[in-house]
Length: 248
Image (cartoon, rainbow, N blue to C red):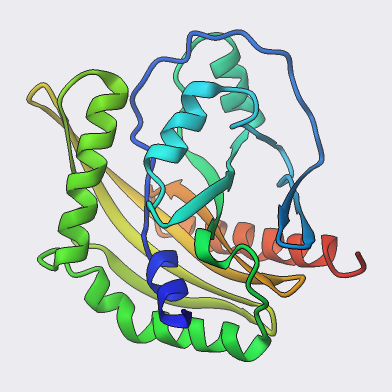
């Protein structure tokens, strides 16, 4: 089970920056979302300057579900207020920075100790290189599934190539959190037109109320400064999530 947790948390899944959002919605400024995992209610505070977007925009929610590993349940995803404003106007979001929170379906009720979390993180360290091998079966299966899912979602043939993902190390280690940084170039081909976007991704294992959740942040990469920006974003959000569940 621990190896499964690490394995599927390593599934770096990116929303493809295409699709229409011709919908009108009221602004929702909820400060936190909640989900029941077994007999525990987990609170996920909304990052500063963001909104939980899957509850507002069905097209965005479908994108998040489509790009989630099939063994996981997608719980929440957040976009900056500015991107939500674009979607409210019927425009595409920028996807410059967004988040996702998910849980391994088989582990929704599993009691997780700190030792188990440490084991999952260690399994990730040992297996991430193999999993992210562009010639390996896992990446190839993921590309095929993403290509099929996005093609069906957008009703047009789309091919997804995840290039050569690079593991950039661990940056946030707490008793109940382990975070890793990865860079990946997502190449999307739609009707013969190819677009490549370098992305940074943080993958965090968080143990909250004896449950394990996967917390991701995704950011378009423009300069080396972005690495520190997304790491600080993830560390602050990890700390806020743990604090929101500490005394409840």
